[in-house]
Length: 75
Image (cartoon, rainbow, N blue to C red; front, side, top):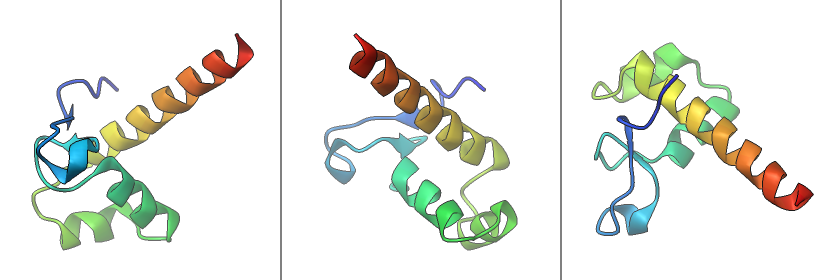
């Protein structure tokens, strides 16, 4: 999943946190919903502006960030 076109960072939105397609919904918001037990379908029902691809992009973004942190700590 290439999240580059879906995850945006704008210093004027949500204090520069990574957001989905310039919306005010952050990657962290989506990850916390998933971690709390919400299903993808429940998230999409609650936030009709989101798509299944947006949720996958959040997961890919988080996985890439984790991978980069592991590489930094191993250096």
